[in-house]
Length: 289
Image (cartoon, rainbow, N blue to C red; front, top):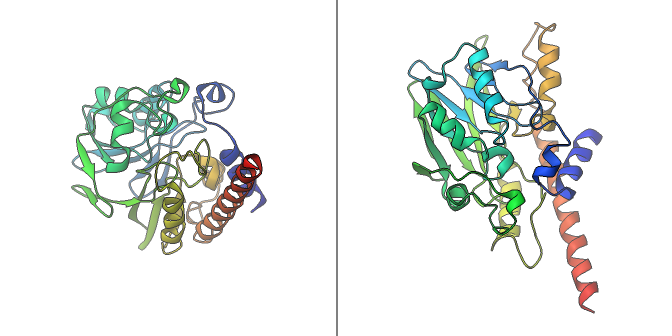
């Protein structure tokens, strides 16, 4: 629990910028690994990307940074899959550390990009919504081929992913759910977009209109979700790389099955959000006096 809180606080208080990525593990290669069923981790050490494989083609979720796109591509091929078999690209949210590599990956795969309505302008404009003039937070523009709605299923033969709108961190922040099977059991998988404050302004001038209500709606929605296998755009939020190491020697069960993890994680996110909102609101009031 303390580890989660520290990570959440760091993500909440930190400002996303290219300078930060040079100082951490966002663009550091890591070995790809199998999560469960047809789901594979193909991201970097610090940025998650997930490949959902199928008999008629694959779906790739997130593209890391522009520098990280090559790592994602290499990891897909290391697993024995072809880039040309990736037919659909998805995005958790339109921030450059998760969308920055999408343009390169789209060109390399020929895939179609699907995205939630709230993030289309940022993806196609290559900006951070609400901070359009801050070029340190920009990303290569990428065309969206299909605009998603909340609850929409993205299907490709034997792949079935559900787009859950969980806004706040970005206006179109999308958490991706699916059902995976192993050893005769079904598990609910969720790649939770994010609900940290990070670089967002949640007091006036707001990052975008309605952002506070969006965060609170996301917390309420997340509390209703059953999540057996929690995944995230930043692997450290659920200790995914550590679990992958454990999986090499522990064959007794799937180490990624962790149904007790998601609810307290959301509770911590909500607590940090409300604390941050109060602190910023009080500071603004004090400054106005």
